[in-house]
Length: 419
Image (cartoon, rainbow, N blue to C red):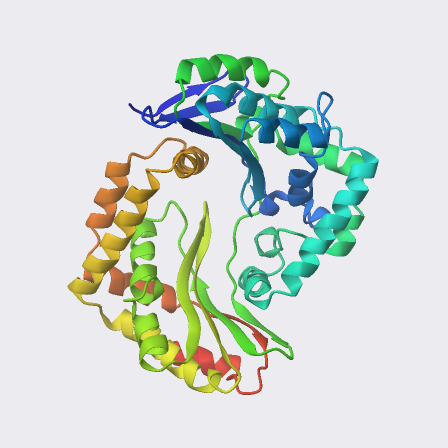
């Protein structure tokens, strides 16, 4: 069975990826509105709105929403990212209509009750404080801010306590009206679902969506820089990164292969050299973050106060070595890891649902798995070395939290990373 897509007159896009052999269905709405679409004065409003959507509608109380899903053994959740927000559910196939009705209800008819808002603001502040108390979590916000300073893409998803507590009901409603319009939404479903039936039901369930327009945002402007925070904790949490690639970049899939080869698995260069050979870390890995107009390539390492002195030169040396060339064997291994991850994800209704929704938001179309695999298969060792030289020649971004007395200065680390 193939992926099908329908656009309603309102502009809402509906896409299904059927799996007739399973007994469940995953569905959700992905909204083209996230942290990077927020004015600075309301940073964190996308995330707060995501929380408030579950706190009662004109037809359901917050408790009723929870009880209706639990009564059918379903799962309902949401998340906020820098470039989108998602509301999704997983249920047995017979309960697809209920899941659709609840998701449609919370996105169109949330009450945003003042008492619920005050409680949820307190919950989000606790979430902010919890992130602050988790160095290997909050370090990525500081890394993002140093890479994209003074612009929406560099701001934290959660916002700040002061801003979150200052957002009133009217402010949230205004933001929702401005951003939660049908052309900025994708309703995706995967599993045991019928496309035509879902389109018919969605036409009724989402009748209250505003037509609106496609959204706009501040273009990404990578700068790079340095953030350091001395803390009396056991480990140095270190992230080193560079200007990355966008979803539209021809090197998008090559960046994933490069990341896998450098620090994506137990056979990767960083894991073998830094952890297995030298025992300098428990955790080290590389990663890519892409957006429609830019991205990041980074490496995270958690190490001891004394070990960081040896770690930095070794880690930087491995980065430089990759730019000098990689073996075909390494590329084959990294490509195999990526392909396996993609193909294994096809066994999950949730993964397929999210994948096709994101593809519609990013590319405007579903991307066939065969097309993705072919692009990965086409990547060769020369492509990886060329891309490494391109990425690692950009201004580094360095973020560190912990006992930093033995961590080299930014200038010296930047010199080590020159390719």
